[in-house]
Image (cartoon, rainbow, N blue to C red; front, side, top):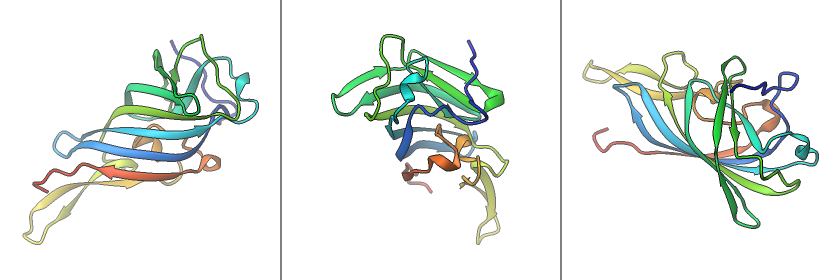
Length: 177
């Protein structure tokens, strides 16, 4: 099932991010893939309860959501994602948590999303590039470009200039590197 996810070209005002904890568990430089987890601290503004579903729309391009969990902080209540709806033309995904609950205005939540992606060669998001080492050998590396609307290729996020937030980045690096 697909659905329209943008309102006047913008994400619906369901929640505002304040911080991202981004962790890349594995970056495979040979297969050009990566997997990670992002935990997003969110606050629900006044009026967000007008959104007709208990879901959140994130930007995600060339990513696959493996699992998602939403936790309301003040009462330690949580919900597992029931469905993920991708809208490629909007570069979004809607993570649906069910119809029996709803957003609570002024409440704080943490959305945790496990995802996999492609280490592209487009110089956007989390991408691969090469360099020549001191011994003359060519090596592959992973690097990032998050300007404008490129973070959505690296992790599921609210990738709009008006929705800025801080983030912490952690990466597991093989000992052979």
